[in-house]
Image (cartoon, rainbow, N blue to C red; front, top):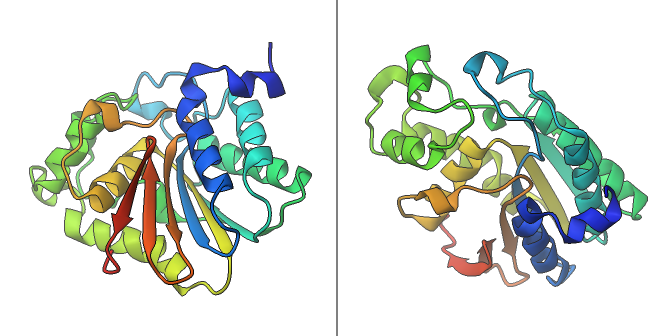
Length: 235
């Protein structure tokens, strides 16, 4: 069984279904940012294949199905990591959005969605190739354990927020920004916005992520894993 009917039943799509449901009920006059992990891929066994691994066929199909279900009443800007699995996810999302009548007005790769800057490749020895310990890695990074091996947490946070949430704040009129990235960036964004350490349960499934909407009066609301959190105007 593959295709449209799978969307409602595949277990790893639970977070994606929840995200689509929440964004679909938000007023169409709001500005929203959807920050997603890429769709389904094969397991990555070593770091040498990090930049070449793409999506499985079911991964492509479900990214398309997600795109068909996202609210299509506002212009959409799509940004992504150039790594194949993220690029392919963005392509399938865009195809689904357009097939449901939506308008994608921008489609662009962004470097910070790939990985943080680093000066010593040995830092990646602390992150398992398939990312199972990504919560621990992000916590250690944020606490400064990796020193100058990797971009400082504060510098990365400033760059990431300027590229994403600040971009949304500067946009005019109702719009949706979609960012397709890797679980490292998704987990970093969660730690930044939730202002707490992460645990293994925070890791997103394929096509899972977070959404931030800016209401007409300027209030910001974060949605993640079935929970809403009000954000400060300073975020």
